[in-house]
Image (cartoon, rainbow, N blue to C red; front, side):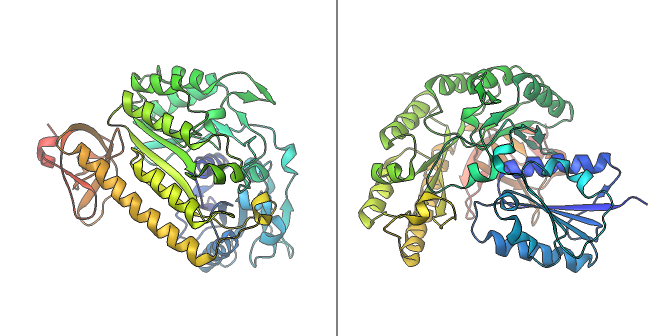
Length: 439
């Protein structure tokens, strides 16, 4: 009987793409993949260092795994495993910790599943992690996350990602196109391009060979994929040429996620971001001038050291005036080995929380205002496989979330609809009944 492996992923889309790739390695090695809630011989936990309480979350997931299989072999990989391997090694029940350079050799490291009295740690210095390992998620019939870039050469004062993932490095355009063709052949309709700093695509072995625009141009020619979505891209790397290309593209959708982090130039400088807010405003204005219905998502951090009430209000007012669609709000938390940790002007926790709440409310206001501009318009919805309380969801090209009564025939189908009304839960209904959508 084949041995069983189960996976749990914390964090970003990039982690999900890498977990999926590791999963395919286990399948090739003769393992059967089971749900994390089922008994397994091996549990793989892919960790994140960006979210708060990484240690607490990791311990909780380990405990949950051992509840299902007390003698299972527990393996921890990911950003937290690279940054704090010894901290993880002290968690009861963990058998092996693998760093960034080792995680894709996971099958060879755990081939015999022998549990040792002491946790094994394989963790090379991050400077030695120079290889790009291609990855994409598989299993969701609707979309896949395709990794095109890894690592980051930026030095934002709040961020541990360069310490966890190393220097910026990329796949080749030919390799990404081949993977996109394989994904298309599997019947998946949408690809989300992902990476740590995807706008910096094109660096291999420390040398720039391509630009992100070159990749976007090549992917637009891949037959069989209906939609390609760009995940988070830095405002200083989102060039006018990229925006113009997306506006007339066959496959790239009018949806951008652009980190802002702060609307105060003073705070942006303390964060060591590579732009001022005027550049950000310019990017938003260009997108909206070429694609009036484009959806624009924004990352913002509240409570950064030195952020006064006036600085926060400056950020709030700037975002309030911006023609954007939603926010991802992050409450600043101190990270070891980052310059921000030792900066003066720490913001009290209660103030961080209050500011976060204000921006969450603003995000809902922005999302609703954006949805209201879409009501009455025709749209193409790609329906997903979720099924909750008799309903299912889908997304338009510009990321409006649509809700209809569940119909298995609609799963992974693109349908023309007219957006009708915003429902009490914030999703959008469509005029056509599901029966009509099938014709």
